[in-house]
Structures are given as C-alpha cells and as structure tokens.
Image (tube, rainbow, N blue to C red):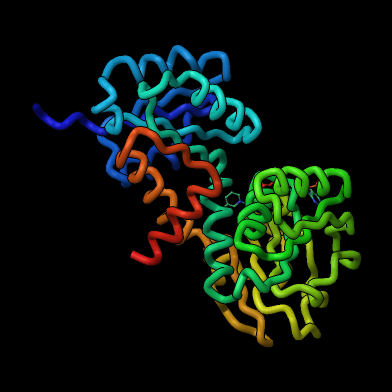
Length: 291
Ligand SMILES: NC(=O)c1ccc[n+]([C@@H]2O[C@H](COP(=O)([O-])OP(=O)(O)OC[C@H]3O[C@@H](n4cnc5c(N)ncnc54)[C@H](OP(=O)(O)O)[C@@H]3O)[C@@H](O)[C@H]2O)c1
C-alpha cells in the first residue's frame, strides 16, 4: 500500500493562519497543509476527530497538528483541547509554538549553553513574565541555572517562578520587581547571563549598565523592534565580543530558531504520540546539535 501523505493540521487563533508557520511547515517536508484560522478551544474537538478517525492508528504518524497564533494564552488552551480530544491510540503528534515563543526560547537557551556552563550560571531574565521570557526562565531552570525572573510586578514574577517550580521541583528561581527601565534596572554585573525578553520596542538596559562587571559573560536581546531592549546590542549580533561579553541579537539567535522549528515539525511525523511544548522542543534542538 502506498505511504500516506504527510498532513499537518494548523490550528491558529489569528484570522489569517501564520504565513511564517506555513512556510516552515512546507520546508520541513509537510505535503498537505490544512490551515484553520480564528480557532477557539470549543471548535477543536470536531477538527481533531476529523484528523484521527480517517486514518487507522498505524497511519496516524503521517498526520500531525500544529498550534499557533499571536494570542499565546488562547493557543495554550487550544493545545490542551487537542490533547483532550484524543482517544487512546487514536491520536496524532502535536506541537505548540504560538508566536514563535517555544522555538525562540529554545534557541536562546541553547545559544547561551554554547558559551556558559548553565548549571553554574546565574541568569537574569528581563520581561520574564511574557510568553518568551517565561519559557527562557523554565528552560534555564531545567538546565540547573539559578534564574532571576524580572517584571515590573513582583507578584507576576513570583507567579512565573511558582509555575516553573511545579514543572521543575528543584528549580532555583527567584522573582525580582526592579524596574526594567533605564537607570533602575537589575544590576547586570551580578549575573553571568542577561536575557532581555521584554515587549517589542521596550528598552530594558542602557549601555552604561553593562560595563564594569567581571561576572557578566553573555548578553542576549530577543527584541527585534527598535529601540532594542539592551542598548548597544545589534539585531544581527551572533557572539560579537566586547570587553569580555558576548552579545546576541534577535536575528543572531533567529538562525538556530529556524532550524529548531523545522526539525520539530519534521519530528512530528516520526510517531503519533509526541506532545511538543517548550521542553521537548529544546530537547530536539539539543539532539540536532549533537547529530
Ligand atoms: N526573535 C524571534 O524570533 C522572536 C520571536 C518571538 C518573540 N520575539 C521577541 O521576544 C520578546 C518577548 O516576546 P513576548 O511575546 O514574550 O513579549 P510580550 O509578552 O509582549 O512582553 C514581555 C514582557 O515585557 C514586559 N513589558 C511590556 N511592556 C513593557 C514596558 N513598557 N516596560 C517594561 N516592560 C514591559 C511585560 O512584563 P511585566 O508587565 O510583567 O513587567 C511583558 O510580560 C519581544 O521583544 C518579541 O518581539 C522574538
């Protein structure tokens, strides 16, 4: 019998399913892409049942689901609804990457791991309450780094720390509410790694705040919209060294992000039982580098 074509069902909460995610899907070897926009969690069950009851369990590794969209909270609800709609062996593999949050965080932490022993690293994550920052903090904690989650609100930062500790019980995570704004930032010189994951166009750290420390080795800014989060970081920085510090910008990290995104989509078709969230996507990135 002929091999079944690889079908990816894209469930996106935006009106127009992401073109970016669609292009990556095709480049990852998807042969048929079924894209649905404006998806709400209560629409998911019927769509998933359409995907799982048409091919027998042995062929379901050739069908997979990708959950995306700019509304990350809604996408997380859709991701849960997809898993609830599965019925035993009648399931597909599924990947969550709303607004690129999982693949970006995985690329950022893998990049940092090339230059630091994360288990001995003290890290500061600015904008640590956003979808990307939360995942960066989680992945760093999972690699045994000590992580300070920074927010304008200590309560919000603490909520993120609590959520990380639920997933990684021995996580070394701390909340901090010092302002991200210039002149009153957390003090970067007390950290080995600073990752700025604050909202696009928000300045978190001035150039003056990055000088003078012996500890600081890696500075990463994931914001691609001027002004960049960390003054002095260039969007294309990919390990540029200045005064003993290595700098990485959003596009510098973007190359690895693209590779991880593509490899994760491709891996969905290896079996029908994978559930790819931040941790699993990070692990795929790690294996990609070893191979
Ligand atoms: N390179 C890539 O491929 C890629 C992919 C996705 C995202 N990104 C970038 O990664 C960054 C993080 O994305 P995200 O979606 O997680 O961001 P986000 O949700 O828009 O913002 C992250 C955090 O920034 C803080 N923030 C918002 N406005 C602020 C302000 N005016 N001053 C100080 N802090 C402020 C908020 O924390 P508090 O309210 O708790 O302080 C918020 O939780 C963005 O710059 C985004 O553009 C890059």
